[in-house]
Image (tube, rainbow over all chains, first blue to last red; front, side, top):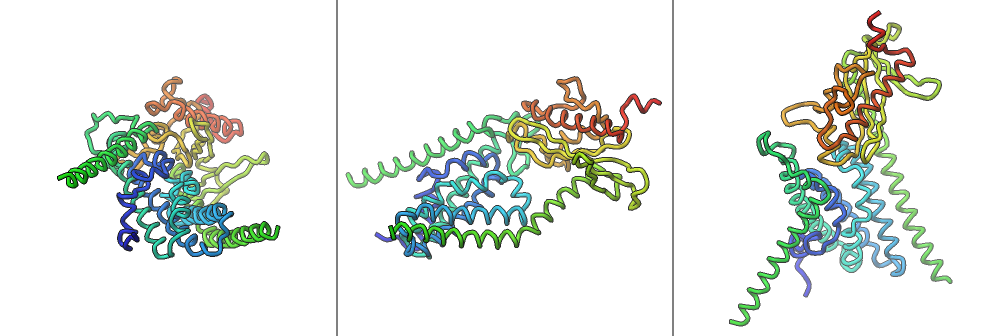
Length: 208
Length: 196
């Protein structure tokens, strides 16, 4: 059954969310989500690379020999990441300062290679762009959620704006690496739990 | 054999195209990146040497770089202050800070230009509290005597960042050692010199 174009776009939001469902790209999800703005910045940068690499991979899928497709995909992805890095350094220095070392990490972000291999190399350019956009939005959304939770609990702020009085003692561990594992673990748990509930409902409606 | 060559040629062509794309973007952004870098440096210099109108970069014969700040465009008068880059080994990065100092040895300001310390701990060296315009940690250095800069744990007056003594110490000690170099060069005076 082929998906409609709208479904192709929205599947990345929840149904096939990169972090919560595919469990891909955990490295940046753990590393950069110490604040909401970092999460959004990383999400947007990754989305841009994802859309560009999906487009190119889908365009060249006919001429790429199967045996060397992975190195070619990597070259395409690495090229776009370097372009993003240079453009950010020149035109968005504040964002560049915040994301700094994480941008080159997009090269090895498995979502991007994953979508190139699993989707763009088998589908039309249009669908690949939609897939990249949707996956990117899903990735950005989940990074924003993780970033917000960690910033609120670990720093008592949101977007740098203090939420609690001066007496609030932030839960420092939430902003350190273990905090990322806690938040992602709990989010994965919530997704799984809602899955199981829906399945149960479906089964019950069949039985009755 | 011929298939292997075909694979190599295909990969080669892809790489050549990628190289040209990168070269093009590099050429376009090169000027902009250099401009940004210079702007950040200029702003930092102005911040740490607020009295200087004209700041000139100087390189010693040994290759060490520092900056001289003059009160007017005229550079024949004595400089009102000096700025120098201090590199301190922190917890997870080498922290780069620009320090401004007057001839009296009084620090006129510091600005951290680069650090990758732990978010929430050492990275607080650059934290600006809500409603304020500058970093509380870096502000403490203003007015301090350069040669006596030290964190509270080492008997100094700089309050270290909670949970990040290594970072705080790295900044303070790297600044102190640059101040000692400036004194050795005879550019700034120490507390005891000033009495006479």
